[in-house]
Length: 618
Image (cartoon, rainbow, N blue to C red):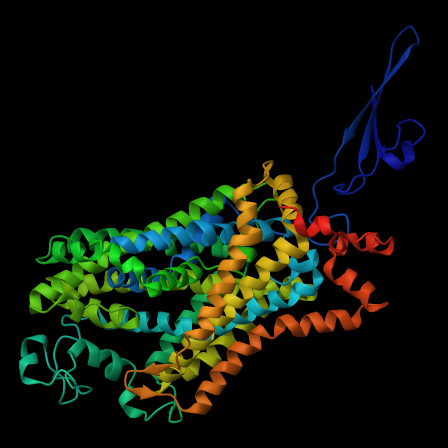
């Protein structure tokens, strides 16, 4: 038996050449086996042998990496969407807006807008396999919205990492026999410091609890600043904690999803373990049941108040993490055939259930505080940083083994924050390296550049007056601008690219075309909802403030410039695209709104968007 292996190109006279396909990875080989029989008859058989897989595709570009396991992707999405706001925002909104009745508008907006937009972003990223800017090869004139969401994620990183550094500072401070926010005999305390038990001797206007003074005077040192125009130098304690956070982020992201997908196994699951432990402890405390009853008490009359519906809609917009480019970036690393529909339902549902579940934990402790100090629940119930850095630490300090409980609680805050921060950073990194291909080979250096730049800007937030900078960024960086970004994104996909074409893409991936419900939401309901939210956001705008401090006009101008800088990416890039394309204006417009893969159709005068059918079909 004679065996010989030769390239297929040399055997063209023996074996018919294979028809080239789009997924051909390289030259194939043919194994030719000649078998001679005694009677002189010769038989031949051939076998196609595929060469070892390479790291490049037919165009010579490196294949896009994918998640190591499906669960890595799900945990990353859940970890990003489930953040500190699930603990400090939703439970308070529920309590303030009719208790269980608040779930009616919340679930309504979840179904008509939250889930459809979540599904849309996952499908968009998975099909196009690029970041927030690169996916707009489907409609180039809208690429500006990709840069909008990348900028928003970058801006949020400037102050979100500071919250994690506060949690880390509290964590380090908890490793002590007596927690530092229990008494008023510390160097940072003011004469107005008073324990709850002594509140009858101090005016409510000036009274401050030890926990409140520890946060504002012991951690932030806000008493050493007169306002945003008097920041001072960065405080070394918070700067050190911020540096640790930045290092953690870098080594979680530097190798891409291969490393971040492993980190989320801890950061995305730990909060559920801690929340469960805290709930089991909380429900045993006196007054806890009263707190939970107040959380769930149903007042349907509150549904007649338009503000309740607006707050439910706002919570949906921000709690799912749509519009930051993170969902697009994460899903772009999925396998092409991954069932993104199922993922969207699972992850968005888990996010909402987590918000609801955390309310039991929060209000069991708030009920305990109300009972312990014999005050009404609304005296201790609050949202935002005051809940997790003042009220909750104060409640934990009264428990036996308080230091242990404090360590557990702040580890939870740390893990809640770190994977959300990882998502925001990944949105920026993936979005830019996909747009500027030369950065692919230098991902580690580019990641280092992004995290260091974020660290340097964040230093303004760890000065004596850093809380004022933090408040300004929190108010302007991702408010109206992110609603505007998602609105333009929805219009670009459902109207210009076409909801029917988008549905074809999804069917190509998962073998199932989205139902009429999803298509109607994408084309009509969600854009109308987002337009309403943008209008409401402008109409109900209030200048930021911190306590009794009012920001000067120049600070508000800086904040608006920050918000507008991201939103202007949409018109600026559209103008740039129209000006750089060849031909008359109609030709340039046709190229700008047609997918890049179909520009040859424009040359033949076939432009789908110039037909009435394109705009009417669902």
